[in-house]
Image (cartoon, rainbow, N blue to C red; front, side, top):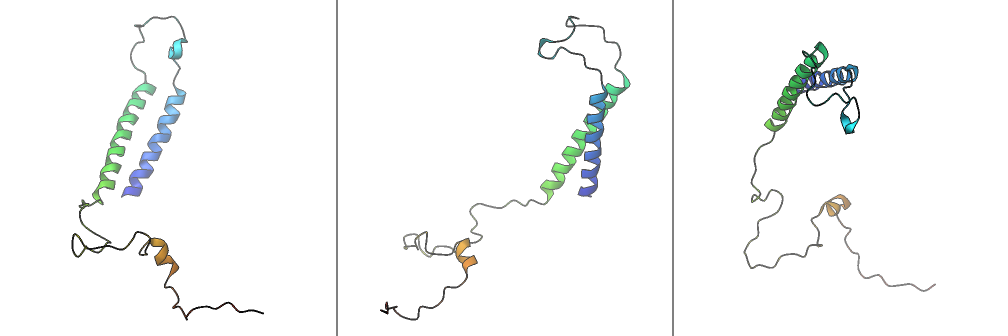
Amino acid sequence: MQTVIIVIHLMIVLAMIGLILLQKSEGGGLGMGSGGGFMTSRGTTNVLSRTTGILAAVFFGTSLILSILAGLDRKPRSILDSSGRPAPSAPGAPTAPLGSGGGVLDQLRGPEPAPSGPQVPRSQ
């Protein structure tokens, strides 16, 4: 369902880009253009600008639908829940230092080999 709406959304975007590029520039941006004044008689809106408005409304509609569909999968969760950490046994109990393992890198490294005893340097 979401893929179909994304495809429709992209087709609307491409159609809007094409319609906007086809329209006649009225100037006036950055002080350029004809000195026609503020209220010029433009007449009724033509087909291109009306179609652009309709496509813009459909674009906003599909954007809202996509954001609602994306929000359906999210479930609220509390920041107080400890999902991956063990609960402390007592408030004043000492804890392990930060670099003492349990991190992602330590899990990827795997178990450490058991020490076989002290290593004594050998002379050759």
